[in-house]
Image (cartoon, rainbow, N blue to C red; front, side):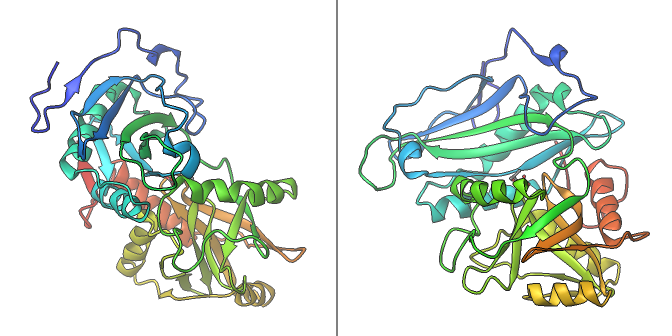
Length: 355
Ligand code: COI
């Protein structure tokens, strides 16, 4: 059926909902998927009729360029449900804009804003019952675009698929996070694709992260590819540190993802009169601050990670523990952000978006 939306969205609903099989009190991150997905194909130089269909496998030609040249970008968003059963998103237009910034860098076509927003909102209304209300849980939303056009010639594909899939999810990390500051491998380089949410940026991290996991860490903190001295970002989140009372984070660049949670924290910090420095900072500075007791906090920030406190960092064979702090910046930011996301508090920034 057609929904009568301005984008002429076609909807086919499932006859076999999987909802009753889901244990909403025990949700891993991103492992089970809601009943429907939003799909749109790019062909003959334009995006074709968008559709919502039952969540299902897709069939691709083995020569599809996604398999050979990795043309693929994605986004991470969440939907929240409040006590009155209303559905909320958090700054969705930031994700809508960013997926097109990522696509451009990978020579992929932009996805129209009205398709993105109407497709997403209709999908959330249809799969509303999939949005968890258990504390700390939400419906994780994964919009992504990849090359379906075929050919072994190393050039951009002529056909693409855009999908939004959703996964009711619990927290990304189960507790405090231990990180290893990387001194050999690199995530990105000047002029590269580090700022884009390209699938390959994450694949490239898996091997060094596996090595770190074997040593007992959860994530790698990436440093600049030239000197391995400057802290950039972690595997699935931007990084903040607190030295004394000052909150410090690296400036975004063509090597660092412009995180939505990162920029929200900077606005909240300003609102709370917390001294902030957006500047380059070094591993040496962190190690010294840890030794002289001025390093108070380190935390990651991202859609999946929300605000995740770091309890320890490793560097050159040494581990440095972070102190436990009452009323930490991390806990304050997490509360302010999640209270806005779940519609529990005033939203003076206008970030909450009613579906
Ligand atoms: C997100 O925070 O949504 C991300 O896309 C990070 C991903 C590695 C889970």
